[in-house]
Image 1 (tube, helix red, strand yellow):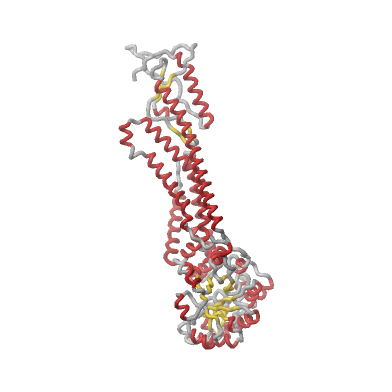
Image 2 (image 1 turned 45 degrees about the vertical axis):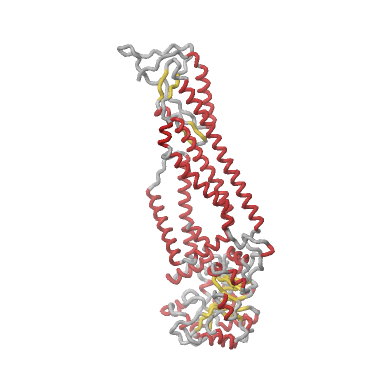
Length: 611
């Protein structure tokens, strides 16, 4: 469960690494480390489960070493702790799992039906075997005992414990599509156009986000819109910066280590412009993104000399390439001197850059009236507010977290003709869900992968899914019924042979003459009949088996005591041990029956010796 949960939240891996970096100060792919560790634990427990099943199948006694007991206990505690952390401190990640089920529930349903067909094989063996043993026991007990033991029959309880959950799960799988909703199940003519891309910090997986290399890569990838985070330094110069401090993306630890934890807005531009902002990207052994491709030598050389760019530099490039720009303007800290006027300063810088106003998507909600009065050509975009509030502010675009939008009325915003941008969408399955939901644009770090998607993944038409649903249900039902019927016939044939031997020896041998011997239940239990791969034992009763006597053999003389009564002796031969092979078992039983029938007339009548 935890492994599945973590895999489904793969779109949030970079955010998890960022949270760990803020707490530890070390940038690493902690999400991948945790994923690998959970995969190892899942493989270990699965291997133990498979070995346990094989040992039970071979009738071997189970013995778990105390090493494994300790490891399993640690695994349970560790997984429980992680699930508690996710439930307590990362609740919104469960929304991602719910969204992923909209995509994968269809395929989980079809694959689960196939798994139930495979599970029907061991279930049929055990249920039918238990049914056969129950019939044998009912055959041996009286009617009074049958009534007394009816409610406490262990075999009946075992059959119910194994068979009933199997049947209930199977029925649920057959009808679960009635409750499945997926945006990717629709007709092809209703599929909307491919969403546009907002380049989050340029194209950071192929080029440095805070430099012109990132912009050039974004331009080469035909990205229409650029998304950046802005800060304002002490001398009122807006610059591009995603992190709160300068430790990860600059060389401030080498230049001024004592001030490395300070907020980036508490430095002057003269100092910020001297920092190197590219060596961490090109020379570090830890890549910023796990799936990032290696940089070319030209880009590496360019990155090594990169400085922190100003907002005005980004605007000049956007004006030159006619690209739309949207930026998340971070408010300075409370003690910053420009805390109350940073909106006015940024608007002034944008207007001074001479960029066309329609190319600016204005995101901050503060001082919108002032922005509209100074720059009426800006396209205003807002957060996830109600439709009434958006209409009041005359806003027709929203930039929202994908988790919150899908659970807060996507249809309501689409009905109001509001343009929607989702952030941050990095996984193909999530991009496919946005495409099928007719989302207009997405903000992404993974432009090089998403750009290659020409058709949404996991897209399926309703008619085809209906066909697959009915076909898989019918096919699985046929296979399951056939498997149960096959093992039921094998069990019935074995029981007929067993009943034939028991009825013959019980009804005839008590009246036949000749040397006889008693075979008690303890000795007779060594004669095992195999139904499939499972043993069936004789009932708890005493059976008399006659000794085969040839005509040329002298009669066996029994020793007598002083009174002249014969003294009971040990059996002349050991109990028969039946082979485990199905073919040998049937051949042996036929030989025993033929031998008993051939020697029946030659057996003289004698009384059973006293016990």
